[in-house]
Image (cartoon, rainbow, N blue to C red):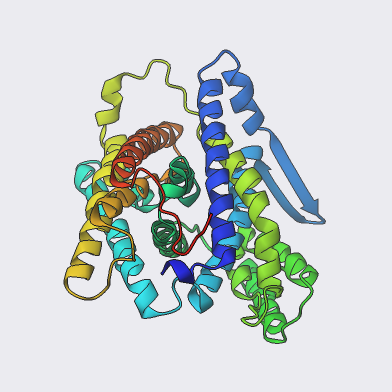
Length: 398
């Protein structure tokens, strides 16, 4: 499997790891500011109204929602590009490659949701948040992995990436099915018309990226006004971009390569900075055992471990899949903990699930607590499961 890791994937892993470190600092900074004397300025800045108008077509949202609905659409567009490439020619392009991450990811989505529901059975007002712990933050997880340097097998990183990609597909489906509002059929039809036009451009293999970008922005605006969550427009637009299997310079490859550093080092850190701020002043430790934060934290820590590790073990023992070369079960266990870092996607789904500031703060508390414990425990477990040094490649002569 290691030989199958493409240079593009290696570059992706490197950028994603570095971006994860930036995200960690952005989240820590937001948490520090939200609990400092300038907290009012921080929250007030995020509440600044921003209006965009074109004739009678008006989008009026506070800055925080422009970040969550606008900037995150760029993130989801990149996710869509990555999913399309992985399915057509990458880690998900054949059953032998996709079987283990597919089964593990399904377990890693289902069991966290079940744990959350179990904790919140008597709290009907919280059940809408069932999908929050089902998400994995690949940038954060790879950022923790990067702290261990070259001792981490590339195949293990690729497996984590494949699980996260499938997790993202699941999150996209969940958002579309469960977290969209009342539909404006006219706006939805306009968005669909733009999508069909983009499909036609893709089928014609138009090489210029400019028409795709302009039409994607137009589709985003229509979808935003339609009641379907606007970030899904990013995914839909990505599906129309043509992939050239015989070249590394097709529209999809060029857009993915150009967007990735912007998303890793700007979009996701801005989202983390805008959404991680929660005031801890006056919050008692007992608040963590309230059903909403507890369900999220346990869903991440317990559900992800049991789901990913347990389903992967069953898949391998039944012959449905096989472990990658140079990867052992202790490392898979550590991976299941790192996949429990839900941060970006968990916060995103939490913002879709709840409107109450109290519930959103509880979501942040549960996500931060669960993700922090998962990051520390995953790092320590993986550190103990890795060799102390990296073996030199065979045939290497000094």
